[in-house]
Length: 186
Image 1 (cartoon, rainbow, N blue to C red):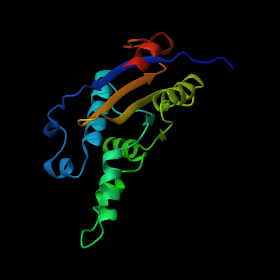
Image 2: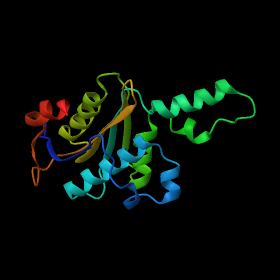
Image 3: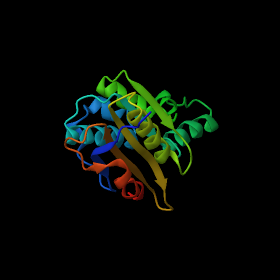
């Protein structure tokens, strides 16, 4: 069996500064989402827009630690006990697959959806999964994301990168194999 070539059509990422999320989320939606989730949805939509793709065949995400801030908030409220009830939103957003699931819900995507949580290898695993499915002909397009909270002594910054992989060379930035090293360094 011969493998199909895989191409990178678009990449969207965010640095330390947040975009104006009001363009994408209503105040009610934004209030219920942590920063990492907002950044993940924003980069995903920007990558798809840049690729000229409305709906991917698959959504594959990688996260080393998931939404650690949400997890800590939920566990902190449990530890304090008393009359304070832990916020259910913190619990729901603390699981690793929340990010990929929310992107799928926002897009209305009912295709393949997987999350890799392999400390230090999550993004590489997500990319490899999407590459394998496209190269074998199981799917034609995939939205691949890497979303994490990186902790620093003074605060935290969030990693948010979204990539559109495709079987078609049309409009591509280049072949997956040629750009993989650069992509993993971002």
